[in-house]
Image (tube, rainbow, N blue to C red; front, side, top):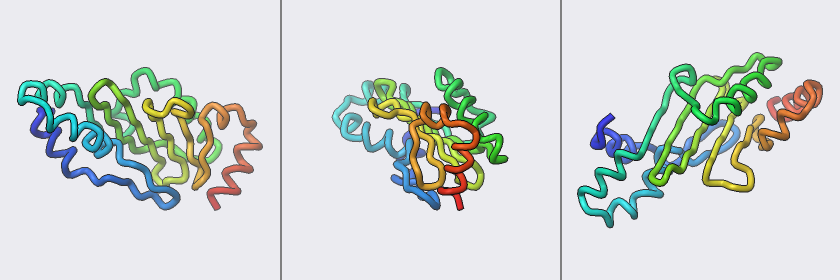
Length: 155
């Protein structure tokens, strides 16, 4: 993807993603908002280099390489098997200086995985309906506990 295309995608991206249970910052527009002030103060050459560092993806999970986050994705995905849920869609951005944000949703939006490298206290979150859980905590729950949580927040 060339820099002009990236710039057009970033400009057109909505600031927020509205899901039935929560509104999230759009990772793609997040890159634009974070970088726009920096980009406007750069020379043309610096701006081109900065845009070349930005990575964007929006589409199916199967076509996306989660890289160093693969294990988190797989573990979260496996925890959804008892609910007949599967992550389907991913929105990813990597901005200047390597800041990463990933949002992964199931087709019915009952589960949302959010990986945000910019948040140091709780960077990996799984939303079950409207309720947020630290991914590590969710994975430690027993199947019965997960089922109780699912029944409480998704119905």
